[in-house]
Image (cartoon, rainbow, N blue to C red; front, top):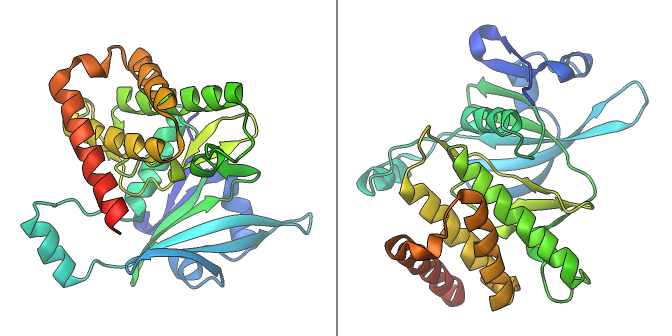
Length: 266
């Protein structure tokens, strides 16, 4: 489903047209208004990126839950470190905005984008809150109460989502189960799209990175049989058994094992 957008102030502010009226009613017409909105901090993994929750006041009197992710410039020392490590891409709120739009257009469930913009202090992206969900990393724990049949449906849904994403030329770069929000009907919604890579023909290394992250997090909560089922379902959807490409699967396993080693030593 394609989302209609509106570009304002020479591109410094872009809106989902469906939210224009309520944003303007809440006096959110300029980037400064979004940047300085009073919100409740909910997450700050990196110094240069933080997320806050706020509510848009509607006619019904009920607040519409939204999240704003603010990106501040990368510190000079980190820029040098990234350069030395051959990391030349810079990811900001507009990268996440474009990814959100692309995922919706390609029918990959994710959060609904509301607005994005550029402020003197950085960039920001606003999304609609998602209700009644559980993280896949919690739902697939042994003590979650999810029965065997539903576990297999969920595992299949996640594997098919990942394969569809790769088939369409997208790589997430942070494809851990914690980033899959699961609705009651077991539909996965992938979040945190700020580092998404979009390529017409997705390079092998991006798929390897995603699959290693997915395999690592699967092994934390799934049995060996379920992990094999995850690979089976991904392979069916992608069009070939990734285990038969010995070099490819060896690279996936090697990276997954490195992530596991870091996890155990943390």
